Image 1 (cartoon, rainbow, N blue to C red):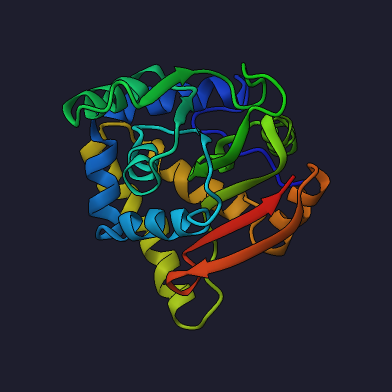
Image 2 (image 1 turned 135 degrees about the horizontal axis):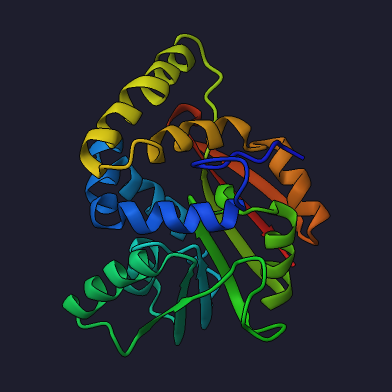
Length: 242
């Protein structure tokens, strides 16, 4: 299992620190996502949703929903009977709730505050579970994925969108320079939290991507697990079934 990378210090729990970090940067989160990825993150989310378009899913849960970007897009494209977004950060959810209210989706999307490693939902509740740029922040990756497996129905699908590490020369080297030095500097100035985007780089480096993540999915009870790389390996979509 990978080392545990925390945003601020080694004493407090990762869960506590991640919640605090996202509370701090919530007002700037959507703007920085668009700026730092040149809006490619929007295309990544749409690619993830394509993985479940033919599932005819009625109940969907979006884990670590943040400001509900993926939740809103899922509702727009798939029109499920029920969609719940869940996140640890109160402030991120507040931004998401304002976004949902502005779009008039209050009666279609519900946002819950909760712990991804101790989900508040019954066994076999959902047809599909999604997570965009969130599993990297779990304190215990296997525990979080096992919980997602628990709340999925039999043959339910998991779709995880997460940053990964490019391997193609010289794109790998150029991207690492941007990710390690430029991105944290912009994030520091814009979000007023000097640690948040440094943590982004460090957590991506520590995350078990590619085949390593597929192995964790298998250990967590998922089968037929696959990985699809996007944008020369900056990001990956992982899929599996209960």
